[in-house]
Image 1 (tube, rainbow over the protein chains, first blue to last red):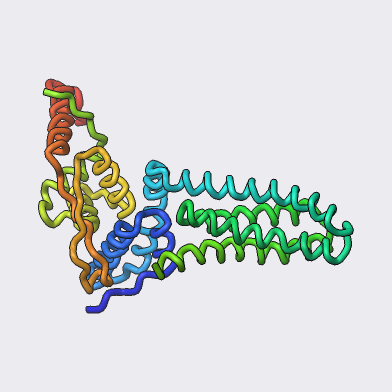
Image 2 (cartoon, rainbow over the protein chains, first blue to last red):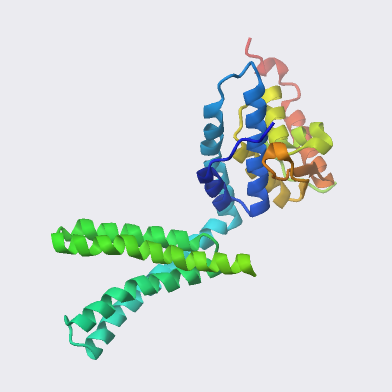
Length: 186
Length: 110
């Protein structure tokens, strides 16, 4: 009998909430019991059982992760780095206006490039400090940009911010991915 | 005798499951044992969260087994109740027994 494949989303969710050996053990338990229930004639249709287990496990596992300090640490790292990037952005605009003519092409390019580069570096730093913090940083930046889009109500600003909505979270995730890739190759 | 911490109901149930299952106690068997005996359909996450809490208190220890094909190449985390866990379970049961002694008629619902 071959083991059923675990959906990648389930692996990702459980992997965020438990350390690696425990997440593997939990997923293995689910695979084993799911196969047992599938083969039982008394329980012919158990396709919902698997996802019911995952969704009902979220609360207890989130609470356990918070107790462990894992999520509290991730949240603290992501918020701190996001706040640092926001402060640096305000200083960079002041600095750029001294270096270039405000509103000129050089100023606009440098100003536009700052946020994605800062997010990439921030994602890298966040992932170095806490696994999963880069993903949370990406989520925080996306929420902040959507909030700006809603508040601006200006078509040009919305078009401009849409670009950031794609680029900033992606660069934060890319920074985080760089840490994980380096860790795997070492 | 040192005073052991009194356990919550889920902690007691999980520890009893470990005692019953012995060397074959891991997430899935613990969950199924509880479901079969009590009718409580716990999520696997609730079982792991409880076991982790018990482990942090020193009542339970764990070790990794070998990966198997029927588990998609994943290893089992096997759990074992420790002496402290036995003491806490006994202390909790003892407290429950002392509190309920003589109340049989008053607690009867019929």
